[in-house]
Length: 282
Length: 358
Image 1 (spheres, rainbow over the protein chains, first blue to last red):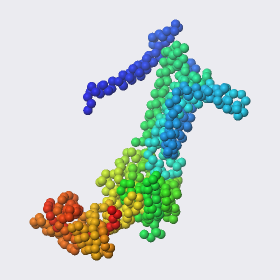
Image 2 (image 1 turned 180 degrees about the vertical axis):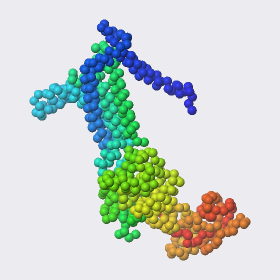
Image 3 (image 1 turned 90 degrees about the vertical axis):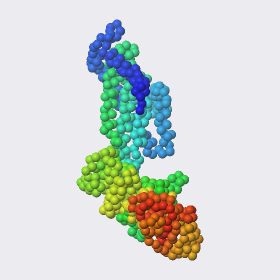
Image 4 (image 1 turned 30 degrees about the horizontal axis):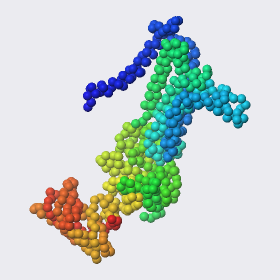
């Protein structure tokens, strides 16, 4: 077996990584969230709960958080509705085109996030592709201004960006379903539709869950899409955190929000893991 | 076989995968309540033939009929056959009970009769006490029993079994063979059983259909296929045998150092191949003092040197070299160690002429 020294040598780099880039920042975040900013705009190392009280007291933070969750929920729903059929088709019916289609789904991930966000800006703007097209076909008289800088634009963009993340685990789960189970279902008299509802869908649920988690957590914490396309009504919680750590210079409050978000996400992931364990079958 | 009593008729079915011909003009009938085994080496097309009947594949040519209904265009869920898969294929997200109830539920059997029929099917395979378990909590043998119950509960006209015992260990496999056979007698439906194991085929089947490279080599009862193999391939695949290639001249066979008069059937003169089972060769005279030689009869008598002796319990398998250097296998009742030259014999009627394509 391996020697003690070897085991230690192998374990040290990842442990250092976790300590330096995960534990230390979280510890700092935790500490900052209990400090405060003085009237002179300096951070005072004075333990207090004011930041958390402010979060509970000021409805602005709660509203932005709820809006963020609503947007993330909508993105998750749309990503699943788009991702599942594509994954199902690829896994079960796209025999020879499988690899080509798979690449087509994955390729957007290679394109810079910013490029994709700006693309939607170009499409949705007042002089954008969509308005020009609609006007060309005389479907509208004046450009629709509410397309861009709205929660709608944010949901659309985030759905575009995070659907592949929902697609991948669903596709993996579908690929892992033994095909003889599908044959057994047909053999026992179940039509393809019954087989989907009674065998394929239940067995793919762990993948759906993983995909939904990706889409929800990633869009909940997103700040570029709301920044570029959200406008005032499309602000999300991460934009608030960014401004608190930036222009507003209230690191303690920003840290408190971040910590709350972290707890929310960790809670969500624990719930998902529990569900996954319940729904997975050896 | 009388065609009108056949439950299943496979008529000149062919199947290609790409440019590979997996099945070529296979015709086969299965009677009501018959246990028919499709025996073949891997790659012989036996599983493909079963999948064509189940409906998982469609033939390129030919027809499949069952009870007056043409099957080959129907999807699997419209066929009155059920399959037991090699790797059980139990639904992992359903309990044993729900696995067995699956076919009844999807075919909308009356809700009130489902529990009774599931219980009955589970009792038939002695799995009643496991109804609430998940498949992952069962051993391989138990899973295969549940798979059997899941298929039989639908009362199919025919049960298709795709090497159902091959994943089990040897002892369990023998036990399941016995149970499978008595289960088939009990339910009285046709079993179409696929295996590569010739002993299993002989133990279970009413008839064996031997498939070789996509074509049927011989279809006959186990005894017939063993004692009267039609071809050299059949003789070698089913049981052990000695293939004797020699010349026939006016009822007289000359095969190297072996020669015998064969009057059982009229053979045309010329080259011919004979199959001689090892147990047909008897030890005549022993050089070891105190051991009596065995009885003699008309046939061939020859002297050979013992090359190898493998103890097999009740019998010994001998590898002996004849005067012309030809090596033969002989199975004789177990006795002490044998060495050196001995005299052997076999009856002319035990040397079966077979078709030989070499």
